[in-house]
Image (cartoon, rainbow, N blue to C red; front, side, top):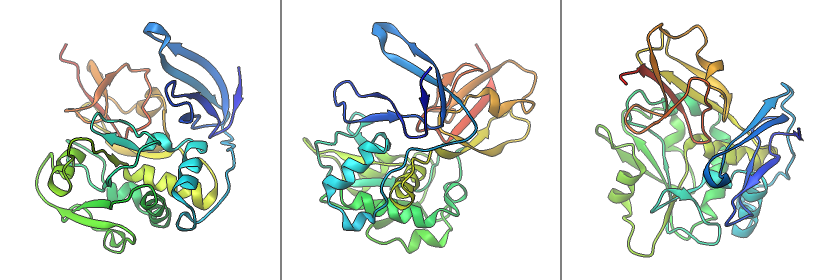
Length: 283
């Protein structure tokens, strides 16, 4: 029953309560669905259509300290955008990574075109990278594909090291890129961020708002007209596929066919998802 805005905290990490998970939309909390041992599975928010947002102070990341950058990301709900390896978990704000990686291409089957989803947001993308540079004593690596990444922005980025890759899947995987550029040794961690989250981080600093808008690829053989959809993170699948699917029995996958996770037809996309795949259900 609580009324929330975009950026209002819904719950926190139980081990590190400074890490907040916030609402992507303004509206009313309709349900808190729990699983075994009362673990939170879903917090369902019904949008009011107004998209009112919590407001945060605007600042140039290059003028802030690392601690100030961390505090703004934690308060603004975008700290979960930073994940760490090993273990592929939300980054620990009490540690410092030896490097931060951003993969600007995805070689997974039917994956979204990063050039398409980032076009028009180049300024916020650079601002987000500027913030990331303050969080590591090492380098921020932006990894591009020589054939896929054609936007001029990729070769004009500042404050970061641009690395060029070529080849088939899994060339776009962060783990492969880390192994080629800066392998993880015992006791070390690296952080990584998706391009759309880098843009959202930039907008937090440039506009002072939590931006949950994502471009998601709707793909798969059971989709009549594959397309990109602009939506809010965590959107329900039903609203994305109505009238655009075949009549066959289907399997819905958050992500790509190889490494995605199966969900129900009335399920929701996740915080990190940039792709929804619909395939025949083989049971």
